[in-house]
Image (tube, rainbow, N blue to C red):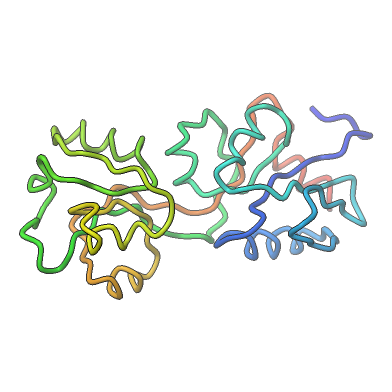
Length: 204
């Protein structure tokens, strides 16, 4: 349990698809602050709370190492990082799905056709687990960003990436052949720390 004099530190995405929704959620709790993307630590004006502006993928590490008491992060990141953290609350924003997609004209119609093919992804751990579970031997091409263009560059035969509306997939001539899981933003904590419910109640 945190002491009254210790600042509660919440790690949030500094820039990206969860950033604005995370800020909106925190303001609805009554927290007042001025967000600055260049500022690593942002203090609250009306509570003993501060935010860490960090990369989305680093949030689980900050929480697991007790640098932050809580973090707002996508479930997809938790799964990929294999983070042993407690999900305190799901937030009903940042919804997306991790999918496998291929070019529309590809002969690959289902996951069994991925045998011996190349799959580009920013989620190599999750993809590897999925392939093992489905007894598929495929090459994983680990890249960061712009995964959807990998097939057109002949870097891969398929991709494994997150999608929300499917618009980016359509623009790149891709179709979904499998969904691995659905994801949304969540508040996470180290199980030894103060519970989020207790923290919310302290603001009322």
